[in-house]
Image 1 (cartoon, one colour):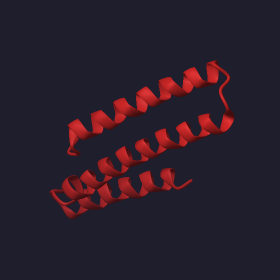
Image 2 (spheres, helix red, strand yellow):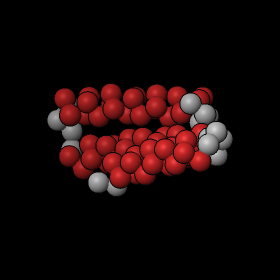
Image 3 (cartoon, helix red, strand yellow):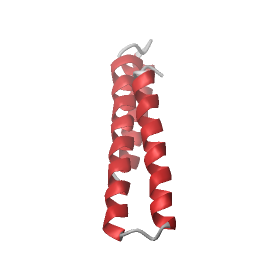
Length: 87
């Protein structure tokens, strides 16, 4: 992976901590809107991680592809990932 590994790990660990907090909120039967806000905050972190990973892929893997065919394959992978994200 060519994305900033330390940054990605820090964000993923933060999201994991938030998920643990959300589970506790549900177990404690907390207010729905408060839970929803925490879910959205966690989703935002995961989206940011995904953006950083895909950006690094474009900047490194696609740019440094050995051939036009390999470059097209890598671009196709990004397009497929975007399709899944945007569903």
